Image 1 (spheres, rainbow over the protein chains, first blue to last red):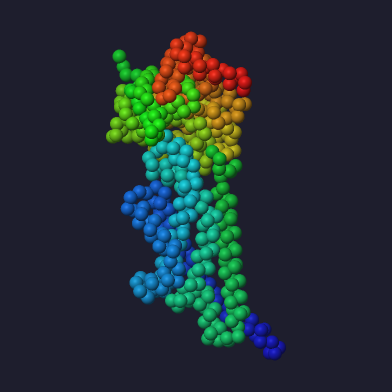
Image 2: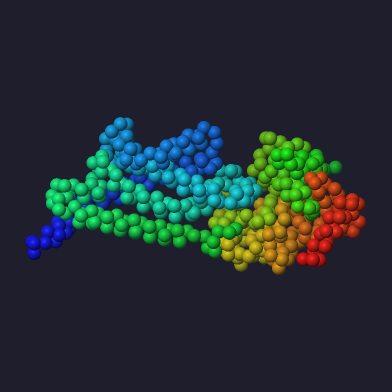
Length: 226
Length: 250
C-alpha cells in the first residue's frame, strides 16, 4: 500500500480537511464582506455616474478608472504595507477587494440604470414624482433586476480573487492549502491544489445557482416591454 | 370672467436651430375636449409636453387655472399632479402590475394609505374596463389594454386636465377602438382633455374644438364641423385631404 505515494498524499489531504475548512470559512467571510462593501460603494457610484453632475461625478468616475486599472495585487500590497489601513489582514483584504469590486459593480449598475427606458422616468415624473423618487421607485427596481447576471459574474470573480490575500498572510483557503504542503508533505502539492480548486468550484457553482434562482424569482412576469 | 383652464400665450420653442413652436397661443375651458392635428413634425407633441413641462419653453407663458406654470419657481411636481399624461408608447412601469401602475402615484405622490390607494386603483381600472387585469404585468397585456392602464394611471391622480400624446399611434388597428371608446366615455363624463391624435372618428364625435398645427403655428382652431367641413385655410384643406386619402388607402 505504501508503495503508492499518491494514495498517502490523498490521505494527507483528507486528514487536513479540518484545516481546509477553516480556510474555507475565511474565504466565504472575506467574499461576503468584499461583495457587501463593493455594493455599498458601487451602487451609489453607478447612480452618480448616470445621474450625477459636476465634481462629484468626475471624482467617482476617476476613482473607478484608477481602481479598475490597478492590479489587485498592487492595491492589496499598498493598503497593507504602505497605507496600512488596518493591522488586520482580513480587514485590509476586505477593503482592497471591496474597493476593486465597487469599481466593477459601479459599471454593472451604471449599465443597468442606463438600460431602463427614458420613458419610465418621464412617466414617473408625469404623475408628480420628484426626480429622486422616480429613480428610486421606478428605475432602480428595474435596474437591480437587470444587474443580476453581471453581479453573478462579479461574485465569482471576487470569490476566487480572495486567494490573493495570501500575499499578506491571511489564512484563507489557498493560504491554508499552501501552508499544508510547504509545512507537511511537499509531495501532496497537486492533491491539495486540486482539492482547493474543487472547493472554489463548488462555492462558485452553488452561489451562481442561487443567483439564478434569485433572477428567476424576481423576473417580471411576461417580460419587460411596457 | 373667470380664467380659462389652460392658456398658452405666445409660446416659442426651438431645438437647436430648429423652431418647433412659433408663437402658439391657445385657450381651453374646463370640460373641453380639444384635439390637436397636424403633419408630423408640426410641433403637436411638443406643445403637449410643454404644458406639463416635460419640455421647457423658450419664451411666452402657460397658465393653468390662471396660475403661470412656466415660471422658473413653479413647482413642477405640483403642476404635474394636476395635469395627467398618456403616452404614445404607454410607458407603463414595467415592474408593477396594472394595479401597481395606477396606485404608485397615489401612494408616493399623494401619500395615500395602501388600502385606500388600492380601492381607488380598482375604481379607475374598472373605469377603463380592466378590473380583471389588475394583477397582470404590462408585458402580459395587449397594447390596447396597456394604454387603458395608462389612462387609468393618469385618471387616478384626479387631474384638472388630461394630456394624450398620440394615444393610439402605437396600436395595432384592431386595438384602437377599445382605447378610443374609453376616451369617448371620459369626454362624455366631462373630463378635460387635450389630445394629439389623428383618430378622426374621435375628433368628430367627441371634440369640442380642433386645433390644426403646422410648422409650429396654429393655422386654424375651431369646432370639428367647421374645421372639417369648411376649413378656412388652404393648408388645413390640403392636410385634411391627405389624411382622408391615407385613411381610404389604409
